[in-house]
Amino acid sequence: MIVAIGRFVLPEACLQARRWQDENGPMRAVHVNLSALELRQTDLIDTVRGAIELAGIQPSDLVLEITESQLLEDAEHSVAALHALRELGVRLALDDFGTGYSSLSYLHSLPLDILKIAKPFVDRVAETSQDSFVGMMIDLAKALELEVIAEGIETAEQLEALRVLQSSFGQGFFLARPQAARSSQDAAPTS
Image 1 (cartoon, rainbow, N blue to C red):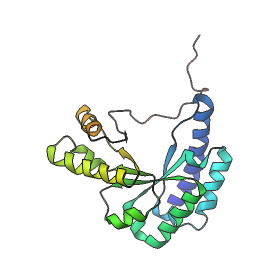
Image 2 (cartoon, one colour; image 1 turned 135 degrees about the horizontal axis):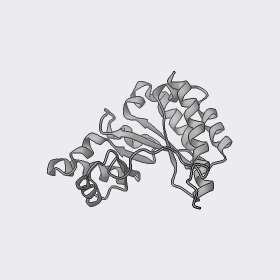
Image 3 (cartoon, rainbow, N blue to C red; image 1 turned 90 degrees about the vertical axis):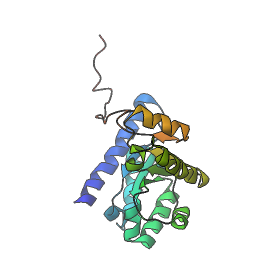
Image 4 (cartoon, rainbow, N blue to C red; image 1 turned 180 degrees about the horizontal axis):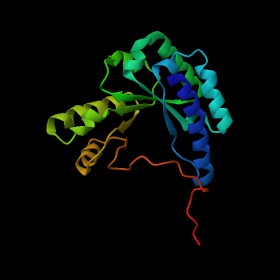
């Protein structure tokens, strides 16, 4: 079932990214979660390439997010799939960083572009003890030349602490609630 959902979501997300680009100009990227089952599909690269081509976006306009636990399920195949996706030009994010069990040497060998710090760490980032731990995660990502996204920002204090720690980006309810995709056809009339 999850593979079928992914095969629906991926091209839809790419098409929506194209609509946003057409209406608003360049954007950073659209992020799509990739399940462990999808990562093991033998036609994954063709599926991703097809979604990109159908939408007419650049591969770098797509970020596929995977979790540490997904990588551990079939590490050899997962790493090979990630390298193939990277060769395609797709950007890759490690989601929920800190909640899995990957070693630092393993992290160093992955073809990643983005490290997303898990919400449980962000929840306590304004506390002194967690501040230094999250700072260490941000420093590690920067040493690996990865962008950093802090997940689950819900308060002004968390946002300020993450700014001080120099997190590249953030997401969460404090910044914006999830919204439906809106196109120019959905816009309210101005007259």
